[in-house]
Amino acid sequence: MSKNKKVNAAILIIGNEILSGRTQDTNTSTIAIWLNNIGVKVSEVRVIPDIEALIVDTVNHLREKNDYVFTTGGIGPTHDDITAQSVSKAFNLKYEIHKQAFKILEAYYKPGEFNEGRQKMVWMPKNAKLILNPTSGAPGFSVENVFCLPGVPSILKSMLGDLTNIIVGGEPILSKTISLRTVESEIAKSLTDVQNNNKDVEIGSYPFFQAGKLGVSIVIRSEKQSKINNCSDQILNFVKEMQIEVVER
Amino acid sequence: MSKNKKVNAAILIIGNEILSGRTQDTNTSTIAIWLNNIGVKVSEVRVIPDIEALIVDTVNHLREKNDYVFTTGGIGPTHDDITAQSVSKAFNLKYEIHKQAFKILEAYYKPGEFNEGRQKMVWMPKNAKLILNPTSGAPGFSVENVFCLPGVPSILKSMLGDLTNIIVGGEPILSKTISLRTVESEIAKSLTDVQNNNKDVEIGSYPFFQAGKLGVSIVIRSEKQSKINNCSDQILNFVKEMQIEVVER
Image (cartoon, rainbow over all chains, first blue to last red; front, side, top):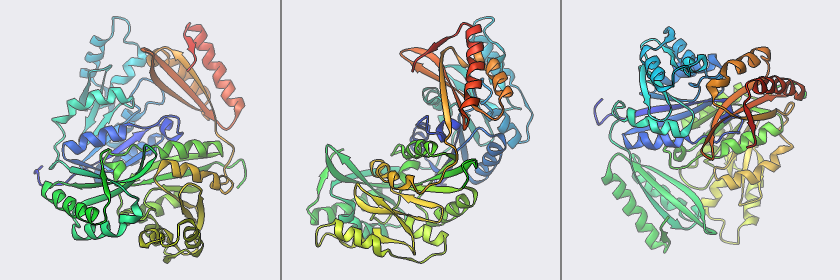
């Protein structure tokens, strides 16, 4: 892919524990920040339950619409871990023992410890490529543009390094944040003018509370530093005119 | 709705700041836990960018498939707040000044402070019902089964109380967690047997790390306490046989 092409990805979080509110997802922001740095923009995130037909349909929908799909969760040893079998069905591939994964886990565990539960983790779509796991042995896997990662955040994080050279991004998405001691409604009109003058730059406005004081962070995002600088100058101009304080965050 | 009916909801998080990884979403778990307590199960969550056509399509898809839809984000005063206009389009309703909302904000602000930016927040779909905001004045709104809430977590939380008597749930979804000093692969087979014997109960298995030790939390969920107890007994039976320690979390 050329560096000028925009590259996008979807994140698919698989797990009842996120939908029940029991577990706070943090993998979305981990993956999104990592992807941003390698020039891939996250176009959407979905969270769905551990239901095979839903996983199959959603994987197939997202992989058509995006350059990459990253799934998290459902690749462990228990009955509710059904991502690998579902992805096999999505691609119409045999769900079978992955020989390389088997060897990795056989060597990882002590003799006699590589039991039936653990062996479930080496069942994958036929010819899946492995994503190595430096934390706990059991690898993730990819098929075409779908990359299946575990749900445990610390393990997931440790596996992204193996992928950084495989994912081909476009230009990195750069950003600049300007934090102001004001409220959104004071600057809404001036900010709209800047956005209208810079239609190909993404300008977001986010209120914050810090040390008991209100503020607004303006986030400017673009692949081009010059466009960010241009927007930033225009924002700092009206900020100065309106005598609004710029703050560190 | 009868108390025996299963009631489901989708959560739609609107905002580039979540997709870029800049902001960690916490509204999903806040809304999910609140809904669970009033007998509504979250069937899916989607995060999408601030793009009108996408918001329109996604709202229309989700409101057909779910008893309720809760959106978060995009109802503030700035140019990137486009939820109200998008929901108007989704329902083919006029986007106009909501008189009651106008009166609320006119009274909320000091004379002269109810400026153009703030007035944007009273533009809503025609005949929208207001969701009162005890924190910062500007109300959310609902149209039919779609409820639009702000993105700022503390404000969102303060507005759920106003909705608790409006949302009609089914039986509350009960849960029990059993935490064990073991690893998933040790109990995977026994847990699968319990799941197979109790197909209408949702049993999840979640590894954890606490104070440097590994463990597994088993979460049993059902509308019926008797079914939870039944499952719990079966799990505690094999746990005892296998001499696995039950731990407090």
